Amino acid sequence: MLNSDPVLIELHQGVFTITLNRPKANAFNDEMVRQTQAALKQAATDSQIRCVLMTAKGKVFSAGQDVTAVVDVEGYSYRRHLINSYNPIILQIRRLEKPVLAAINGSVAGAALGIVLSCDLRIAAEDSRFVVGFSGIGLSTDSAVSLLLPAVIGLGRAAEFTFTNQPITAQQALEWGIVNRITSTEQLFPQSADWAAQLAAGPIHAFGLAKRNFNKSILPHLEQVLDYEAHNQEIASKSDEHKEGLRAFLEKRLPRYSDV
Image (cartoon, rainbow, N blue to C red; front, side, top):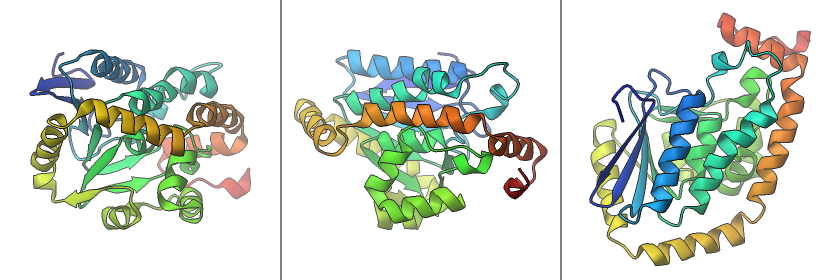
């Protein structure tokens, strides 16, 4: 792949690094989604790949969906979009019978939060932030955030940060189990690379079977939840609240939901 591609891949000694490369916010458009799906498909089929490391260029891991890519599309269906984009990515990560480690630099929000939460392990820079994001533009949750976030931090905390849209700090994320480890920004990539190498040297088949067990015991309804989220997001996307949220986002102001 070219360095200008929105997703970069590299295989080194069993570690397959997938790097989001669409500065400055690494927001997903259709091509970035396609290349992420293709990279995960390669990870599943290439026997040389023993561990996946997901990371990002720049100071933001990902702001989630690039709303400017869809705002003016006539007849745009959020449900169809989710079924073709983030739902497959979440399922690919969970069904990949190899460890998937996310190295999180900066902020992560929206659909990208779902992607990060679907990974098996997470290490974050100490200045990283986790934002649910959807309510900021008058939308419901998607990308399995409605399942994975409460599973990790509890329903009450998940509801609070969904409704307030306030960031969860790296330290809170560590204490609540969103991330396994935090480190300095300078050490994030060396430490994540070392951890990924350790995982790649482990019993990958056994790891895969353990992941099957986790999916069966904790996430048996993941596919149904993703489909239901897409259904509800379609409803939310037709609302006046979403229209106001988008206007506010594009005008760089706070939304006035009480006026709609």
